[in-house]
Length: 616
Image (cartoon, rainbow, N blue to C red; front, side, top):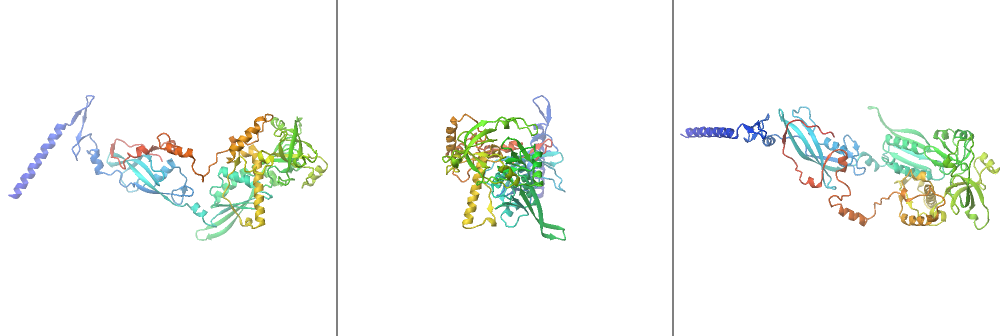
């Protein structure tokens, strides 16, 4: 009786379900009328009996998404490693690359760390990345979020599309180069830069060139010695790039050697340490040269007594009497090296006061290289007197100078006194004794407090320079009086270099010159003093337009910066625009407000066709 009752119940339920299915099917109707008057066929979902458009799986998207996981096998969390020292990101196999936030390079690095995006061997289903977008995160959260949109074929001909968030945790890890910087003896290539002179003005200028062009990047440490500097690099390639930079800025020659540290006979691998000796030509700016006859003829038949105008990868010279210029190539100098007859040392320069000047008009000499019209207009015959002779005698000197256009009555300049000096070249000394050389060679004009002889002129200077992080070598570690003497010589060389920089506009264009603390006071005084000077225009004088704003890292924030930070919380008043870097790389960026509404995983939807693959 019990078995017969259960069979009757099952049969009753079967007929009831069949009647409900038929009533639902015919009540919903297999055909529905469109707005256009046509009909569209619909079927019922095999799971929830919802009317849907026909598809290969005969299942609605919600049921299909609940049965099949589109993000199956794709990780939603990953780790990235960044070096705190150089801010580079770890790629793979010990490689570190530099990427900006929100950049396409960083996006490619993030996608390479997401497992499951690339189809592996043996996997039947197909996954395609359609879109990737940055999602805003807190700046100090050490997190990066990327919103990925993928497509996956779940059944034959059925494509599902779904968006989800992948979170990357940023971990700190030192790169190999930063690790080597904290170890001693870890260098692989050494560049020794030397110049056989008694001052370090050339290395002060070279230091500024290195800072402007960033040539010291990748250098483990820098040491300074009496006659040069040593640069330590972790590999040979970085050292060769630094030597190439030196070839473009100074006349030099290089000699290389290597030392075997260890070898592996089985793998035929050897470990070397490389040493490169770079020797800079012993000619500096403002040195007085007496050229060999053959060299003087080869550069435009210039006079043999010339002044070094500036130093680059070539030596630029100028005739102080006629204003004719010439270029001495680096190869020509090293074929027949020569030394200056007078070096631009502080003890060899004499201060002169300008008493007057007269214009000079040159006649064309067809046997020599023509002097430019602009250079001819700069010549003038000046009347000068030694500053030390004022008030004691009436000795005056009249001589032609290539800097005559800069000078006017009352100015102070530095020059070589050719009457009382002794030249190292015998032929030049004979000409000087015979009176065939000029009595004075003007080197440069003095400005500001230096010209007035003020004790605190250096402190009132309106510009300042940056410095490299340099440590002294073992040869420079002295004590007592010798150490104080070395410090005084370094300060004197630095002051001479700043005076050269202050008097040469072309030289200032090659380095970064920053505003000093006394720039406002000096600017006011200079404007008041120059109000009455309308006679000549001084194109070599430093101006505020040439100075860069200095960045002081250890100072407290200004009131204006604090107000700007408060205003940055207001929409549209942000100091740094979010998503600006992503917009340049054509990558979608989800801002701060929209990021709060982004779900960790959206509902999957059916796609009719495959989308275009995202290019990272």
